[in-house]
Amino acid sequence: MWMLERANSLSAAPTMPDGSRVLAANPDSAERGDPWRWSITLHTSPDGVSTSVKTDESFVVHTVELLDETHCSTVLTRCTGDVIVVAVKTGKALITVPDGPWQRRIHPGDSFVLEGEVNETIRVELTGTQSTATVYCLTPTRTAALRWVP
Amino acid sequence: MADHILNSWYVAAWSDEVTNKPIRRMICEQSIVLYRISDDQAKALADRCAHRAFPLSKGRMLGDSIECGYHGFTYGPDGRCTKVPGQTTLPERAVVRSYPLHEKDGWIWVWMGGDPADADPSDIPDTHWMNDPNWASVEHSLQVDCRAELVHDNLLDLTHESFLHKTTVGDDYIYEYGITVEVDDNVVLVDRLMPSVPAPPLYADTMGIDGNWDRFHATEFFVPNNLTLHSGITAEGAPREEGYLIKVLNAITPIDAHTCWYYYSFARNFAVDNVEATEQLREGLGLVLEEDKDALEAQELGMQTRPGREFDVLIAQDGGVAKARRIHQALLKKEAKEREAKEPRRPGAPANTKPIGAAARRQAQKAAAASAGRSAAESTTSAEATSTAAGGR
Image (cartoon, rainbow over all chains, first blue to last red; front, side, top):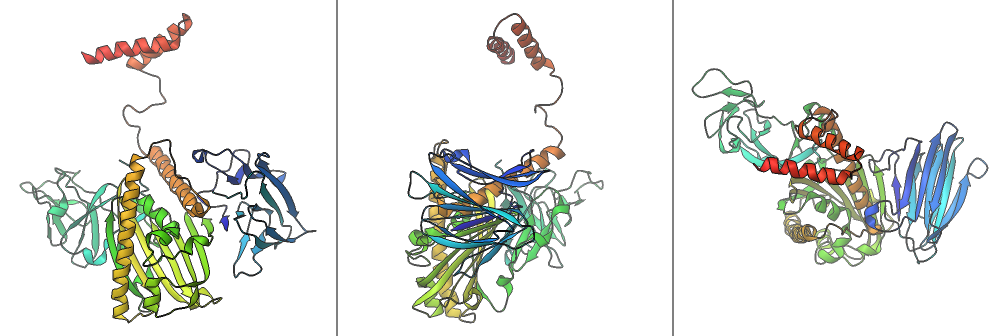
């Protein structure tokens, strides 16, 4: 299962005065009543664009993979219960599945979240010049699956 | 009055419901009269005579004008009063609101926003399937005693088909397949592919098929009120456009905070000339909608009696529901902000001015109490007691 939220979505988190914007988080509203466990933020400043991840490590651990000119594509297999978040910092990226008909291009400010209880494989490829992206893989420490509800 | 998103086109009626006999519709807690004038154009005015608020829908048509059935004030299609019985001068304020209206593919759409300049018919979603000779459609409409948002949720999370619609469009397998969700501007798309499954009973009969097929549902929600369900069945592995295709148009029009109109059109690109299939679908889909209505009305009661500290427990399948709710809230907030910027401050509303009268006295008392070392709370209580006593005389 995946969700792609475009940067212009009316449900996207607003950009803060410092240029940062939460791209994806779980849970991301107080009414859910759960403790905050992870969030991924896009930062825009005169120095450029960056992303950061914040996790409550007692619930979630994470790995980070950077895509740039030297490493411009990757095949990601999301293991059962993990969540993968792809964020483009500059340029654009193409996301495809090896056995599926669909493909999606994503741009800075878009967020692509892949989650579920069965394994899934996607390919992420940078397609523009000077494109860069970050791939976060989040793994639960206490439960079998980190199900994501926006 | 509940919060409604007003800057939007809402379906007010089927085209054939609107004639030269005025009818009344309540939309977002605004009463509207709909009628046609001599060139067949449909018109929408506030259903309230400027004179004494009598419903114009209880009046009669005089040419292209509508005459109030109480004291005979008469209004032209633009809402301006054209005649007051017994006098020749027309009061300047004798005008009723005229709503922008657009008629398309069998539906009458009314713009509920305050500024008619914002009413752009190109914002109305595509509904051509209702009026396309290559498609056959079945229509229903019903009033549902639940808030409009529950119908939105119902259509965004179709796993309910496995439980609520077992004999018609449901199958146990639906909830076993995950969804993809895409959010762009005010549109949420929830897509579910169910590869290699049997067709649901109602469709299998109409299509005359058996065996396994790839089935799909894709609900496209144009927040706040229109949901198009792109659904169908294709041969395994075949592109969707080659399959038996269904377009279900759902226009959800709030009446008030706890009631809505549900306008429904089910269009298909198969068995287009098959009258028997059309009747079978009309009956089967009517049953589906009654099942939905029963469930939604029961859910509305559950919502109304639920303690304020309890919230829906959303799961991964509710990704689209969660996003649509956010967009709904964002639109409400945007409109509230716009209203605030346009409207003059209401009497009694907090103002960015120096306090006067009792408020000024209370503030002065507080300041004095604070400087004398007394607690502000004591001072406030004392001031309020004084004020209450004064008001009681």
